Amino acid sequence: MNRIDRLTAILIHLQSKRVVKAQELAGRFDVSLRSIYRDIRALEEAGVPIGAEAGIGYWLAEGYHLPPVMFSPDEAQALVLGAKLIEQLADDGVSDAFSSALYKIKSVLQSGDKEKLEDLGTQIRVSRAAAQGDIPPSYLAQIQRALVDRRMLSIHYFSASKQERTERQLEPIGLSFYSNAWHLIAYCHRAADYRDFRVDRIQDLHLLRQSYKPSQRLSLQKYIDSEVNRMEVQQAVVCIDKRVARYTENQKYLQGWVSEQELEHEIEMTFWVISMSSLGRWLLSYGSFVRIVSPPSLQTFMREQAERLFAHYAGE
Image (cartoon, rainbow, N blue to C red):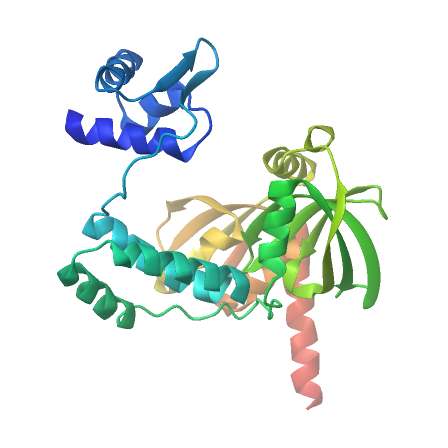
């Protein structure tokens, strides 16, 4: 990136946040702090009203805004791809808001680029994740509003494991998408502890007027770190016949794969897992092409499952 482009990008970055640290700019543009200091000085000399305070960062003076920004073709195309993902992975409220924003973005593009984006939109398809249930139209938008305004939520939640419906008062700390579903992480007053709620299992949700102090709760990242530290991770070593090992490539990472080494006729794979039974059920699909090295508990699980299958089909 040349310096003129970097100066423009720095100005856009400053407009996107209330306060920006020099280290953040240096990291984004992969330049030294000295270069950032020179760039800020150049913007100030060009008449851009930039405030600064040692140890705090830089900010633009209140009321200063850039004129409408032109998007590069790559940026506009990335937004079209993002729209396709949001259409399937978010609820209608978020999807409609993003679509409205995308129309505004398209309005500042040149005619040729608009036509290319329309064509690109017909050439990208995202299928809805099978594990994710339907999310009511406004839930994700309301949760985001609660996070931004620091307001509590009242929900009715259906627990699949207990098969029960409960009412909860929550202080939301974050949204996370994993295992093909959106999860609301929040401090639950009923449990007096942090809980993970699948958004598609929330049966009723209301944004309350009551606010909360985020400083009294864990951040989303600290919650995730604490959960990882609490997990009991175990090591498993298995050997998979080379004739089928290549079929594991797309799934082994989801099972906790960490390393492997090539033997004469097999690939020895090492996994770190939370649930041996989950790993075992996956390995069963490879039948006799799998050999368990350790731990003994996984060998026992595989043998028991095989015996149950034999008894089931022998009975038929």
